[in-house]
Amino acid sequence: MSEGSEHAGNSDKIARGSQMPAVEDVKEITWRHSTWFYNLIHDLFFDAAPHPDELLNFLNTSALVSALMLSVIVGFSSAYSFEDYKDAIGRMNDAEDDEYADGYGLINYEFFGYTKWTYYEQYYKYYFCALYMLGISLILVVLIIMLISHTSFEGPNGKFNELMLNAWWGWARWVVLIASLLMILGLVLFFFFLNITWFLMAPDKSKEQIKTKGEARKYPWMWFIEGSPGLYGSGWAVVVMVPCFFVCLVMLSQALTNKHRAYISEREEFFGQRSLETQALRDKLEEVRCLFSAI
Image (tube, rainbow, N blue to C red):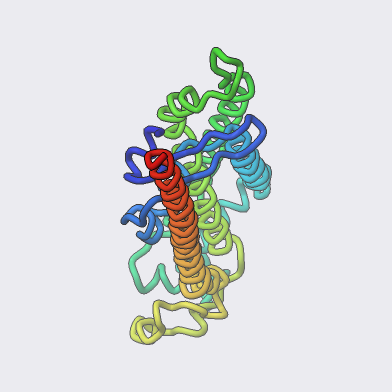
């Protein structure tokens, strides 16, 4: 039994041939298999060790996603000039510029005490955090792919050795987990960065829709204000995307739990049939023994 299986309680890994994936053997449903969200993480990183081919497929997908997002976010460093950023910062406080004194600007800055630097500071913070998280994730994934491609899990008998794989996975899983978390956080911060870009660079007419602080408070968190692309994007993210994301995670968690329950049902039926066959064989042997004893 692998180290991950010991933590799982009643999960084993049955080793197959070197070209076939290992088969997980779940004997009963525990909280690790039924707790939403956690069971997905447990299945990926803390259950039995994945076959090297399965792990390579997972790592290749992670590397592709990180590389694609990096190619997008790096381009933003040259998308705007110094003058563009300086002008955007000036628009954050329209009182300083007659050109923007006619209601052109963000309601946040007049009503809620933000400074004209707030969004620009968030802009470059999100940019660098997303950039380096995705970059470090990609480097770690490429490193693991290089190492596992040159690591042999054949035992002294020349066959695939599950014990060697479990020993390696006991430490390697943490590197894979860190790389995966960095990739996910990088993706989240990248979308935050895109939304801040709309606040800075897109024309904003929210002040023409909302004249006073009292009117602003009547809006539900000021979401879906059509005069503000940034606020409109935030509304879609909070009201639509985030709930849909968590609902999908719940569905995936429940799907994994149902898969385990179906396997246990099949397992009990299989071993129950085997027990009946074994008992029938024992009865036959007992009849034969009694027959020879009578002779």
